[in-house]
Image 1 (spheres, rainbow, N blue to C red):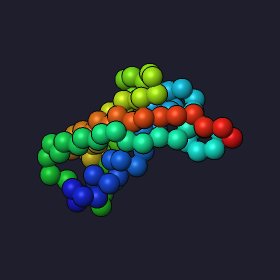
Image 2: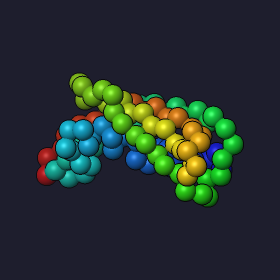
Image 3: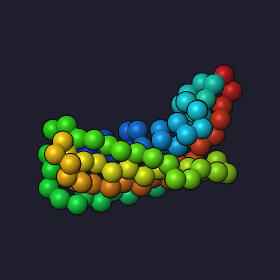
Image 4: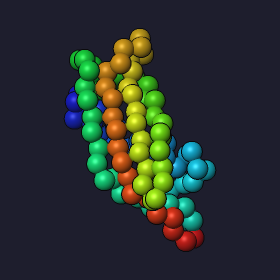
Amino acid sequence: HACALTYASDLTLLDSVLSVHGEVWGPGGVVGASLDHALWFHRPFRADEWFLYDCWSPSASGARGLATGRMFTTDGRHIASAVQEGLLRRVGG
């Protein structure tokens, strides 16, 4: 379950950096690479159940963006926290 949640935590976290600026991934938008990614597990959970992944970006400048996220079970238990920094570049379309 920890491995599945770790994989899921990386899928959309940097999207929060783009959405603040109205950008999208891919042609005519932005390409990016993860510079680092950290994940903390706070309590036991099951990755095969629904959870809320609340993501936001506190900072983006100089082609770098920082994203943070918190994961909650359906009953509101905070199960994990994630932080990721990415390198982002606009590409022509």
